[in-house]
Image 1 (cartoon, rainbow, N blue to C red):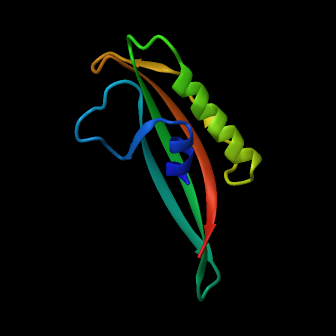
Image 2: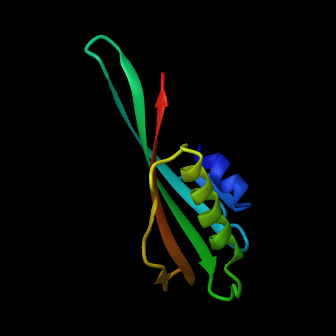
Amino acid sequence: MVDKILTAAQIEHAETVFIEQPEGVFAVYGDRITADGSDERLHFLQHDVVVELYEPAQWVGREERERLISALNQAYKDGRIEAWECEVRIWLQDVQLFMTTFNFSYYTRR
């Protein structure tokens, strides 16, 4: 699901970490999974996703951020994810990047 959303937003992305930092805007995500179901079988998986969007200081436009928001809105509208939230955009002085954190959840069935 996360890969589909970030691909739709046309943002280079990786789970957990990039070995080498890409040029331009990129995203890193994590997926916490909680299993649930009956006593005898786990039927549902809840995915709590954190996407960190990184933008270089010299990046003028915010096209990627807007495309990510549009992709999240579409996934919500289609019923593929729960309501999403976005944290305040912050400046990371040590790496000279802006970071915005997006959070959302979705469910899968086994």
